[in-house]
Amino acid sequence: MVGHHRLVPRIKTPDAILPIRLVALDIDGTLVSDDLNIGPDTRAAIRAARRSGVVVSLVTGRMVSSAMRFARELELDSPVIGYQGALIRAMPAEGSDRLGRLLVHTPMPAEVAREIVVWARRRGLDPHLNHLERFIVRADDPRADDYGAFMGSDPELADDLVRSIDHPITKILAAGEPPLPTELAPLAREWFAGSAAVTLSHPRFLEFTAPGVSKGRAIRWLARRLRIPLGAVLAMGDQWNDIEMLAEVGHGTAMPTAPAEVLAVARYIAPPVADEGVARMIEALVLAPPDEARTAAARFAEEAAAYPGPTGEAATAAEAGVLS
Image (cartoon, rainbow, N blue to C red; front, top):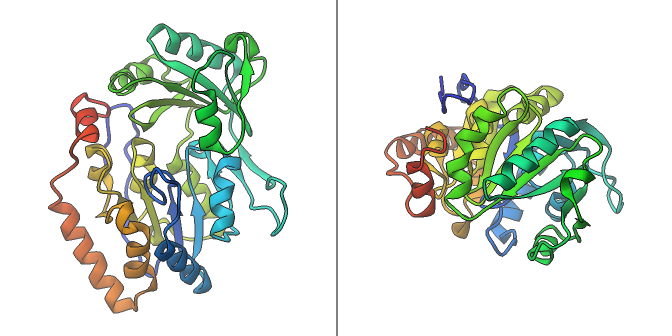
């Protein structure tokens, strides 16, 4: 049984099952680093896993349209999970420029979204809106161009964010300088308990979605759809928004830079992105012969149990009591 913090549901982590049949990957900080490039070993390992019949899916806090470039580069054909699971789309047909068919959409009510924007601003955060594939920022946001470069498309500009909310909203991202978002996370969870789910995708980003939304719920949905037991799922992530996903599966794997609370729920700790940790885990647990995969799984579990924990920004956030 994995217990996170007092406002995150307790999750019974399943026993690990081999062979692994589904690989679920976070993008930023897991699949790619700040340069947003997928390493050649990672591309090769994912390609080999898919050839062997293993399903590979991206599970991200990004909007689905922003994640599609990575899914296309990897030639994936499984659903893409965005906004922590608030939006899930099927992969479009090969060669198509259209977005995939909408499979799941769980937005929050407009009145809750308006309250969140006001709440975040009063506490020094800068909220942005996401609805389906729309990204909306205040018209005078000095970082609008930076956001557009990161997402691969220009954001919409609104003179008044609160007044612009006249329908349900998929996600709100409230940006701020660390450690403010991590310090406000427990307060936000208490304030919006029952009306919004609250998580952090980065020490700078406090995020709000509809109640019940999480990557954990999304991976349960995907595993049921594919008729794959959760114990036979390898999931990899590096931030607080990955906690539920890592705890829900048999082979939950955290990146070594992850906050302490994320490391605590993971069965394994991967090598860093710079060493193509995704490739190394797939090679050892998915592509290796069964006996070698079992030996590697046992070794990784022992190493994770002895892992000393994060340093730097992640450790500072953990000490601030983000999920404690």
